[in-house]
Image (cartoon, rainbow, N blue to C red; front, side):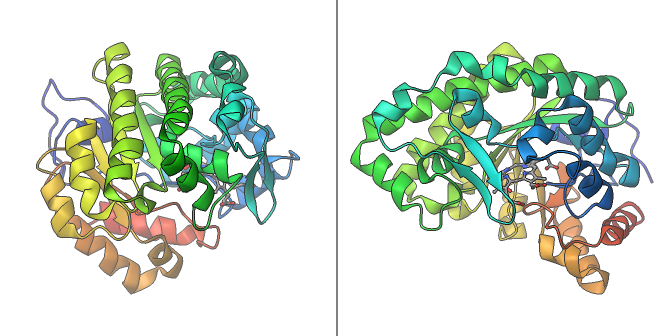
Length: 349
Ligand code: CP3
């Protein structure tokens, strides 16, 4: 049973869900659907020395974006890039160490913030925009193109910690000890991120997602100031420039604050992390479309455990506006055939 789209509804399944429609078969894409779990990705990755070279070579970035679409026929392709291209665009030194993750020359003080250059971002990120243009030309007509950026708080954590933090001591102490100085960094990221996302939309992105991977480490007042406020500013100015552009917010770990995030940021849809209960997901669906939230480790395990996880999510959320996804990115240990199995379960229920 497939619901017939009304004439005024978008023709692509993902866009219909984001516009508020419930569908018998939910649209599906997976965070980190391109990546090291795919042998064809590892093959392309081995052709370049550094991960950023992959992000900045449109021919290769287009290829790895398309790999999971060819293999699985997902309803959406997500631009292949990284949230840390924005600090690179601002002039901070960013590099990736095999097996350790990202490293950045850390920002310690307001004087370091003053050296960052928002005017340099779009010229330096031009290869990523070229990737978006090429993808918009070659994607299958039913596939939605998703652009993305990191949200200011999460990007700031990498910029100040100099990489992935453990306790976020440096970035929290900066924010608490010198809120005006930290606001300079966040404001600069709001501006750069808005420009960058608007440019992605102009290049052909039909939806954008804001990844706030570390939203869950802040107490309430700081969450309002450094997660909700900057996100609202980006959503407002992006939608002023591109009316109707859907924005998916992913405030990972926001817990009880998910509801305030949805109400106060104005996002079109919200991505639920693995820990969000179905009762909260259902309540959020009264306002926005929800996306999520299978535990990526269930995709590693596969079989009955995975099928059970899929059923409980779709049973709870499938009758409202819903996009199937994971609660966080695919991990490299995921057997590619489990993704096939997932799609089969989802599409043949
Ligand atoms: O398929 C997609 O989802 C699109 C591409 C994408 C990547 N990173 C590719 C990538 C997206 C949307 C991201 C977002 C991203 N990057 C986030 C937010 C989502 C999340 O995971 O919380 C964050 C925090 C980053 C920063 C980042 N980039 C880290 C922490 C790492 C190292 C971790 C790891 O898996 O190695 C990266 C590197 C990275 N980004 C890889 C990929 C495919 C692996 C690098 C490689 O292939 O050598």
